Image (tube, rainbow, N blue to C red; front, side, top):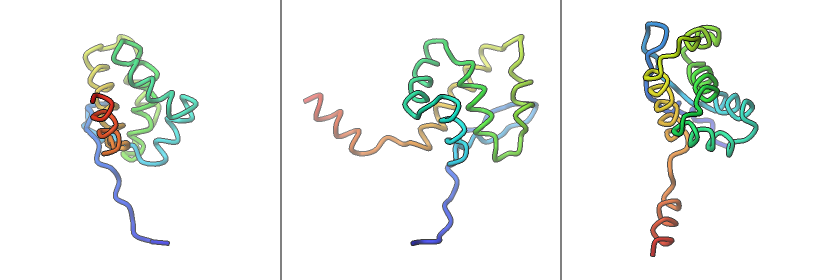
Length: 120
């Protein structure tokens, strides 16, 4: 068993509450997101659906979990997302959450090989 420390994944930054914060999906953040959506597959589906317009829960849960490391209270995240909603800012949050997700779960070489072989 190794005891070396793991480095936190480096995620994108978001502007929230008048500050710029780094969005980090570490293990605890991923557990929070999974619990809110029921499964990791449901999270992936939510990320995909967010690009079709359904993004409110994803943004609230994703920001709350991803900003945990910055010690930003969930109440501040929720307060920043109250109406009136700035759709451009919500899209920026959605994009940052997707980017942080891809940092936590980068596509593997096997995924790329499967796409190549499936295409012929």
